[in-house]
Image (cartoon, rainbow, N blue to C red; front, top):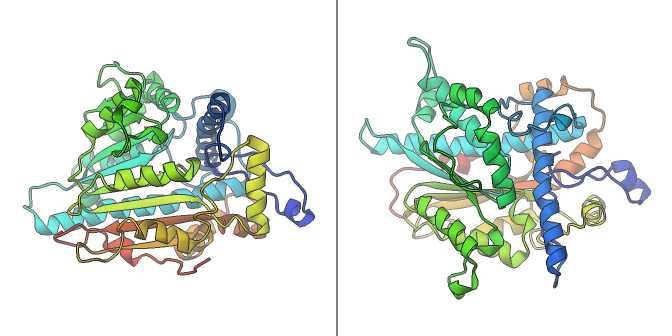
Length: 429
């Protein structure tokens, strides 16, 4: 799974160490307390490099047939890793993680299309904004554009469902934020000759526009923006702005100039905030949520590991610390589904006098059991031989997705009706 190091169930039974190699999402930024500059730099490098594991995980799952991602190859251009196949357990983990987040993102887009259409002129087009924290080599933007392009470039007479038509009409302003080292690599991959035909044909995306002038930040006229920004260095309004160096200020300015605070917005943290020390994590999340006034429909989606206190959770945390010197600093604070829900409720994602809202959460075993259809499960089960069901259950029970929403003060229409209706786990633990 493109996530923290997965403990082996047999190792847990023996009570020994070991485990498998870590993948994307192996959380947080270094040990607590004071660290030297050299230690901090080394830990940053480890975290940045986990994005390579994410690219390999997507490549492995898609080539094995778990789901379609035509862009996984161009975001994993290293020929030495393209032939690398992950275990069936990893591939299933990548599938269910992608399935859950894609469903929430797609329903956000479609709900805003239908709510907008019901209350605006018939020739108007809905617009939404998505901000992905720690996006790295993620391909979600291009997969969204591909789905839209299938409708927009279709030959006359081809039939589509009403939902497909509505989805295709939504204008999307998409932001990705990551370390400069990761944004530089992604921009190079997007601009490569190998990517050109695929992006143009499948997404209507010309990778030669705009002309190259910044290797770390990217602004495409279709509304796709890549921002090189360390989330630990987001300015705190209460701090002296002179305390930030010129590069930090420039990166922050690039971000604020392109974000629209009036547009319905979804904020995604897919194995990102967990890398940050608790205070930085809270400040970053609050910073982005507070960008949008009460009148702006806003959603937050977080995917990360939790439940560190049982044998499997302790082994997961221990493997990361011993194997990569990465400590899960947030996992104790948000160790349960109740704590994960409270995290968003405290930021105003709840019903109030100001707006309709709510928050829900589920572990990934719940998602697999309740969200994935029997037909899809049967298809997945035919892809690879797999007999580690007990270990898979334990793995899935230690990752969760939490989603919170607020419709916006005086908003006309239910902008998150599908989110509110999704099956959710009401467990406290």
